[in-house]
Amino acid sequence: MGDPLYRQIAERLQHMIESGALPPGARLPTEDELKKLYKASRNTVRQAVRWLVNRGLVQTRLGQGTFVVQRARPFITTLSADPDTGFGGGEGEAYYAEVRAQGRVPFAPAPRVEIQQAYGLIATELGLEEGTAIVGRRQQRYIDRAPFSLQTSYYPVSLVAAGAERLLDATSIEPGAVHYLRDVLGFRQASYRDRVTVRIPGTEEASFFRLPDNGRVSVFETFRTAIDGDGKPFRLTVTIYPADRNQFVVFAGQVPTGAREAVISGSTAASMAAADD
Amino acid sequence: MTEPIYRRIADSLRAEIDAGLIQPGSQLPTEAELTAAWGASRSTVREAIRQLTELGLVEARPGQGTFVREKIVPVVTDLSASPDLGGGEAADYYIQVRSQLRTPRSTVPRVEIHAAGGIVASELQVEPGSQVVSRHQERFVDAKPYSLQTSFYSMDLVTRGAVRLLEAANVAQGCIRYLRDALGVEQVGYRDLITVRAPNEYESKFFTLPPDGRVAVFETFRTSYDQNGQPMRITTTVYPTDRNEFVIEMPIPQPADE
Image (cartoon, rainbow over all chains, first blue to last red; front, top):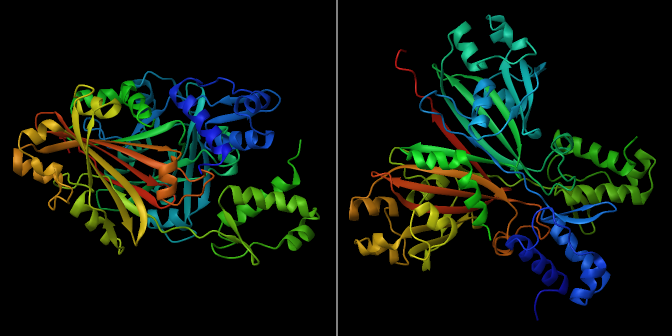
């Protein structure tokens, strides 16, 4: 005995996709062709294709057929702080600089600013009572014209009252909100804590990132809590990144320049992807 | 153009689940209740529930109804540099898991000799085809599978005297400290790359992931560098995303004028 026939067919096709015999964008043989090729029933062939769809390897386009998924070249976000600038995982100018360093074109429209009430995780992370007013600054971020991430930063509204009025401006704060808070309020970001999780996308996220609505492409959700010199949190940044086009890197201690540059040039990402065969 | 009704029912139930109005472990409204509430047909309601099931948000319990799935309490792996940059092997792994009041266990390493290829050769900067040692461990938390880890070392380290890399037994102080003690090769830094992908067949079985591939796995690649800037090890670890998270604590270097 072995695997059921549909699985054997699916795995043959998977192998052809991974070896490049069926390259990204190629059309899979039609149901009729697969039926003949593997001497299988239509039902079995459909099950095999469904298995590949569920693994995100192929996509069915209505009326056109089934195609090998084209993967976007991944963008790599550095989560560790840059020893020169003290910034990591960029906002404002820092984000633009990080994207351009990888030879790609960033775009982020003006943020949407909202006043909300802190609840749940936002309240806990910012050390606020539930229901305290907070400012949310939400930004869509594109790379090479494709949507790559959705970022929302939350600040206690008390920072605005203390003089950081630009937190309410629906325009980007340059060269970054952390710089701005330092200039107007004397805040110093002493450290940050990142939490990296993965979940299925919400309905709105799926439509913004054009993800399949069956949840087969997960999203990273990262939570960055910025801590000031007194050990108090002053900002929480929540960012959603589709896992099919984003990766993260962390540098710790002394890492040779070549190993840093390999990440920026994208050669690491290519070799890591090749390791999955 | 409006959305089909099944989609609106599914989205509305999902919003209630996401907001915590229907708690994990509790029962969804029954088919009859949903049919009545939405004025929809039974097959429309079934399609809505099928969608939520496919997303992994709810599960049918035969004879009882449909329930919101319980979330697994995640284990948090710290990727920040500990003082000796040890992070996450052997004793360090046990300490991290125990600090979360959970019970770790890892299997005795399976040791193999391979010809280096692909990423192992390029990250270790050895010729493709040259000999490398791999040490592979299954790691469990509270008796459930949580991660699969494989470390690769150049055979050159063994010929230079680090013979314990070939032992199929835990190196108690961790291989990084062992290499320092045996050869004076010291880890001074590392680079972690964090990716997410669909699990392969073996991983799906080992972690008992749903057969439809909806739970992705993290795959991390850690390359360690020694005091001469040479790569000394590459470690790949696979973690199911439904039970693992990462945290990084990052002190920010302050400009000298402050």
